[in-house]
Image (cartoon, rainbow, N blue to C red; front, side, top):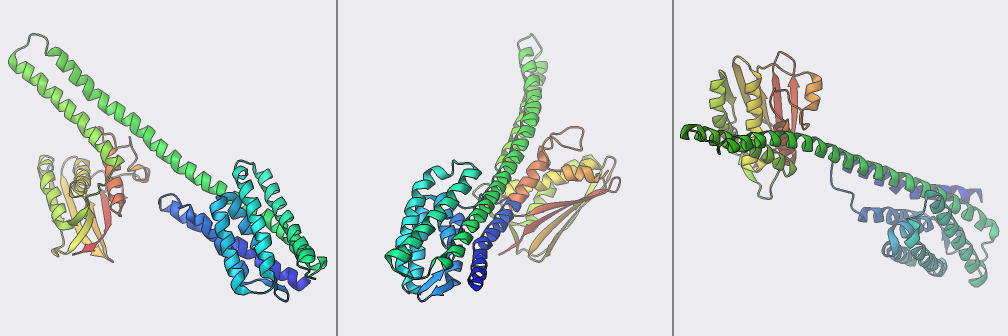
Length: 419
């Protein structure tokens, strides 16, 4: 009996092992902000447990073997409903058929009854508290084991004896208790992770709402004021100035809204292969007039190889580069140099944007990309938020190295695509 009990305990660990892997996989998914865990993966857990338990059973008599397949079957049916319940029943019957032996008929009868009972209870099970879930799952396990004992000893006239059945029944009930509690803890962890992600999104939305309403309201108010003054008797030149100012303020509001929309949907479905050196040069050509006006020299060191590409949308990629170039130029108050380097290493394109500006503190670096945060006197922080969002959507990342008074270096890393 001691040998059988030890083997049963070892077999029980096959119930917990897939649960550990399921939790690790789920945490990895959330670490990388991937989409919600697919529901079919929750069906893999009981199926894997059943397979492991039945491949390494405890042999108790000629043609008879014991294992803990009953636990994942019951949990799968209670949490997954009738589809998963009958699918697991089919898996058990098929495996037991190929194993052979007199115990096949006991499996066929008892596990069919178990599945029918579990499927009926599953309609109400998920609405129960944890206390009642544990009570129900353990009660179902005990009742089905007593039914299996009755069928085996009195209907099929097997002679295993109560002495062998008792440790099997006790370990099954205790195992169901542990497995149910463990499963509920994991489900609670999953729910907490989902709530954290939702809370993070709501926080971003609240920041955006404050930023957008403030930045759009001001130009609209100014435009309204100048349009009202058009009704007064003014010279043609003055009226034209009013119209120009109103249009400029409306353009400013449009720019803020476009930044918000770009953040909300950073990449379109029309991605293409972009030659990195050409995209950088186009962005440099756009920013050179601003650099000249601020007394800043723009120096580039780009790769001559024409076979380095990245996947994305050209206009939005240039928008990222222009935002970073513009920030670097504006950080140099008197004059200076803006250096732009392009390198390729380990199938990764890296673009370094180095300025000689005022630099940033570690606290400021950590807040980069947050809405409503900016190191400039005027701005919403949406530009950097858009930049981080687009680069992330292209499968890349941005790192920042900066010290106050010594300038800042933004490093963009993107997966390279060879033509």
